[in-house]
Image 1 (tube, rainbow, N blue to C red):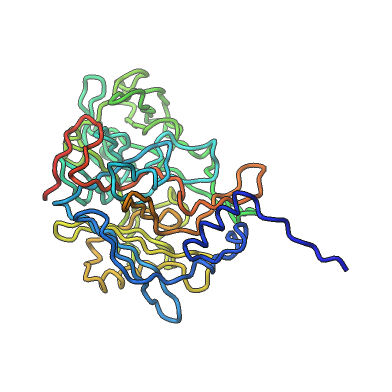
Image 2 (cartoon, helix red, strand yellow):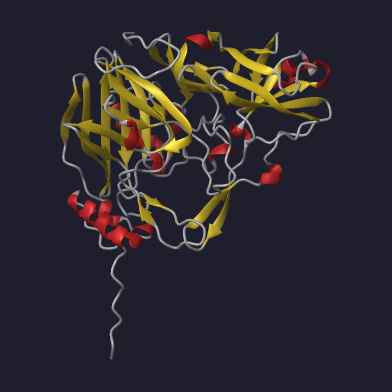
Length: 446
């Protein structure tokens, strides 16, 4: 009888296995991680690391009962010693790459569009509001909390989806298309805003990965209405947005520009191809004073009690269901900003993260009011990258695999790089030079 001998691991897999074992994860087959992630169910030892003056990373294992647990990594940033900014990129990036010579740490950002169709992606994947290096590139479709750097100072606040813009030479009001007041505002001459946050993520079974996410292209347009005109606004250069196409009766692609402006037909004369669009205000804030910012998730309290109406089909399956997931959270603590990654691997028996209710209990255990803490993008995006003594390290989602591409069957371990992100919170000490941009980056002292 001849026993079959399994083929040797792929060269890339051998390197991945060595990297995992060096970190204490006894994985025997990279491809097996797609079916069994129990080797990652390892409790971390409680410790605190000082990454820079005023920047600390605390790690501990939290017991959830019945032998279940989660590893919790908390990054604390004193605003007197460091500044936190939002960086975003429609192309995407690895979180670790944001920890360059001038950054001490980075945390995975907020919710962005995600599907498994590389050839059908939005021009602006950050859902709802996004300010990138002082330029407003995406507008909110509904009232949500947001993290803003306004006049050099970071803050968390509820951001109503209303504001002003200049259309050619005319000043117009705009309102998010999901706001209940949008239809009445449209009749009075306001413009309604649509974007990738209006799309619907769908799911299909997949023999190799279990499921695949996609957007039905024929449905991925603004609602049709004979009484309206839609205009797709595209970013063509720094601080330059113009109308690239006009669609009487609606039906404009949600993915073809930065956002879509809708006018009632009676007020649509200024909507013409080539007209410049300049956003001047959001919820009473002058956009010229916004250094960076992004819409974020609901408070931990709202998520635990199901008050998540603003978070919908554009996320696909709701991340706020009573299911254990890896989570990322943000909250202010006096003059300190705190980020927390609750780590877990879904294909384990005892180490899958926390439910929204368990998140509330964990925050309360830490003395944090769950009404002040907000969810960021969780699941397999949850990660903290940091630089210490010249070395780059990461915590969270060390099990992460990149799915096979078209015509492939091999998964690739990407535990260090992580999922490709479109936004991140980057921590820089005040001694580091600020990045380029049109606005002065002032010390965040309030």
